[in-house]
Picture 1 (cartoon, one colour):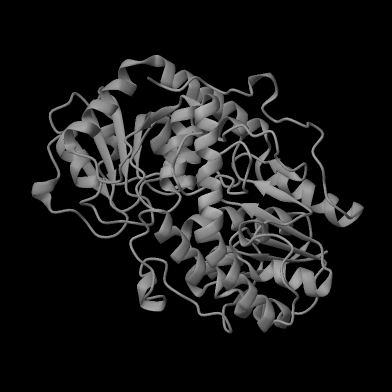
Picture 2 (spheres, rainbow, N blue to C red):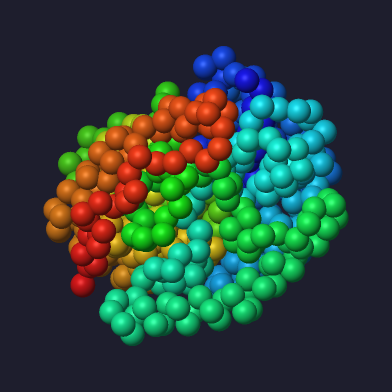
Length: 441
């Protein structure tokens, strides 16, 4: 089988899509990988052939404004819509032409935000699956609009609030991006879309949800072709730990890992406040800076820093992870049974933070720029209440149970073999636990 796997050139998108590519090649399939130059090596290392972004503008995910000057700081629903328009929608026609230039394939598998594959599938009739690499953004009659960062409303008033918000967003932001999608489709000779742009990103045949029901708000209208597949890319093994690791490993105090992730990496947002807040606590802090190093006087005596840390070694020794809420990092921590403190401020990160809270496996700081005191208080709360770690262990078991990349490729092969939408066996992934974990007080 000849498969094209498409990933938007972001670190958090490339890693799980490369894991899918690796599983496909391990089963003997020929894989073409459509992604930006920055992440081509992740796919070629998995045995795939790289297809570059050419007609669509390639970009550096650490400096989006260099290619898309309209993009703001990602804070708030309007900023989310702006990013969606310029980074994901307006590149769609170029993506489609790049994918078509790669030649015919038996299956298209796209990061859900890589719009081009869906457009090609419609033009060519090729089977198409999407991978939701962030929490499910499909609209639901049971939830507030994705991007508002709100928990589902309770009772009659809460449901009325959510319905009003859905209607407001449909009249404003959704109408705006629907207009952009119409332009893209017209440029490719396609008729008007039958659904809104928010739904057009997802395949009607198969959606692979990177995660588990415990990390999603229950909804009664989950489409039957949406399958939770757990953690697609477990933390890579084999990377050497930093020179200070034996010292930290021998320290008897709880280890708190602080990370700014791979996007929104200004250390003033989270890293520095966390280091200041935890400086006088009875913990040892392992900080991942991402790029560069923090000034020595910003790193207190109970902390160590490195650009990157090997999670397969770090997480088994970690008591709490403090993160800005990137989905891949959240799944990595919970996959190891480690509870979280989440400071989600931009794009989908507030949504992720709310889901962690709802799961019972962590604390949501409700800001991307917390004070040192708030970080320290949240870490103390998680360390002091064993229910957080117990719930993280339950989520870890669910992530493992859902099968990861192997289960995802089973479903992809089934799509090509059987044709048509691939439906779940269970109508309700939440089962009797539809109401989910109790919300923290």
